[in-house]
Amino acid sequence: MIDRIQWLGHGGFLIQGPPLIYINPWRVVRSTFHADVILLSHDNYDFCSEADIDKLHGPDTILLGNDAVKTRIEDTKILRPWQSMTFDRASIKGIPAYSVKSMRYPKEAGGLGFLISLNFYDIYYAGNSEYTREMERIQPDIAILPINGHGALDVDGAVEAVKKMRPRWVIPSNWGDDNPEGASRVDMQAFKDAVGGRATVVIPD
Image (cartoon, rainbow, N blue to C red; front, side, top):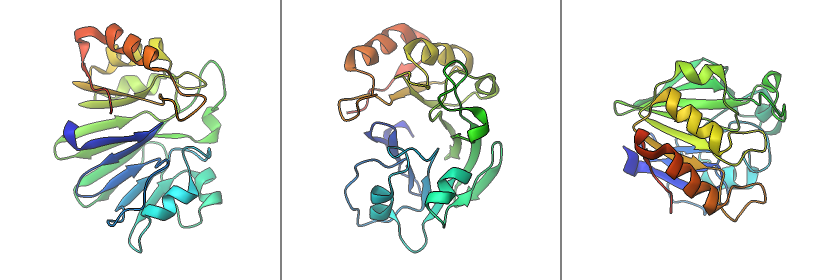
């Protein structure tokens, strides 16, 4: 399953199903194949890019997000924290995503992470979240974790999340040169070194 997950840059990912799932698409190229499901964790411009969503949106595409996303994109289907929805072979559950220390993303704003169960694997996408107690309830096979700070997990927080959740694989997100708030390659390497043998760190191309 790990080889079916593609990093799109910053916090954007593609999961090859079926169904074909995009998470927070960012600076994507128009595709011949429309998304089956697009997951939008909150309404920031770099996580809810209407231009990128339009490139992937077909007549049967399902958009899932919170109330704030729906105010921007009317046909969004609202996913509540801990609510599950099933699409083809995938079960998608909303997980609260919020800041604890910085309060940049307050809990009441309703930000989401996602737990995607597909092909007997559980994939956890943390979204813009610092380390929260809710993460201790999740034991995914694959964890996609931000490492940039700025209201989300930094390197130390992401390592702590790995210790608690014990995934087999972990993919760092919210890094790279295409966003001023992204973590650096040095941060990414520091994260990999700190995780050590607790999980296999998959570094996206």
